[in-house]
Length: 204
Image 1 (cartoon, rainbow, N blue to C red):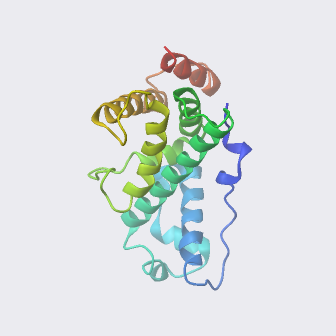
Image 2 (spheres, rainbow, N blue to C red):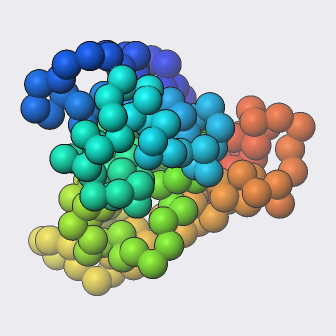
């Protein structure tokens, strides 16, 4: 089973304070925002508090983010990038084969081990995740990997309608089960038992 701790994808260095080169402030702000979300949930995210955390006036953040919503979108995109990364690691540790089993394990591990980030990623209302310019490239990384996992030998080249439907069905199933656990509707004695139960259902 792939665990976030096995990779440096989740290594979040403490943001540096003081002067920033162009681009460094954006990265530091995202690191601070992620720490804030994982400590207190998506509702804990504050534009001004992120500025304080990296040691700048909040007006400096406007050079990189239009507002708190824009910061949230950027953090969600980073979350999908991380999710794609752990899925790829799951494939690599399974002999380099893209199969549903490793994809499900990596996805469930990510969702259950980083519930606050996962909640933020899927909690942005009113956005089309597949077309929004801030989200679509990162979401596409996940869907492309899922396409590899669910491709059949007789599928035509490209992302056919049939392949798309298999990916969307699988995405709905794994996300739905993880979300039921997150919201308390799926009961288990602990997160390990929930993980095992969800994966057992997905394997049927």
